[in-house]
Length: 181
Image: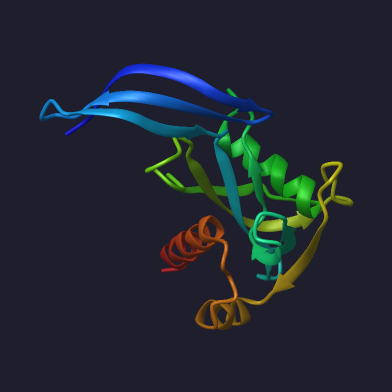
């Protein structure tokens, strides 16, 4: 069922994203003359709880949607960096918290039809504050501590609308419930 890539041409490259045009042969021999694939770095998301059991959530403006979104801490994974280390780095940079109790939850593709990158989700428990966040130069966000019952209500009310964060949050909650059995 896999397609065979016959040729690839990079048509756009900027900062952390590239766009390739591929000519592909389908299993039945048909030729797809132009299929476009976006290449982004891998991403990490952290479902983080402090020592009191509050979720460490982020409110952040996203210019693509031009709206403020509720998210879990996360960001780009450096090339050749262990995703767990990327997750801990992003947790510390965005929240000022760290954890010695980190669990791998899942990896998934955010949009496999058009992108080749993965999202790695981690659950960080017993997070402790280590100092002020170290945000990127153009990053602005608000850290909000939310009890689990309120996170559940927010899920029911569709407050979380960033799909990749939503998937990680659901997976993290499921993993947390399995740990607590």
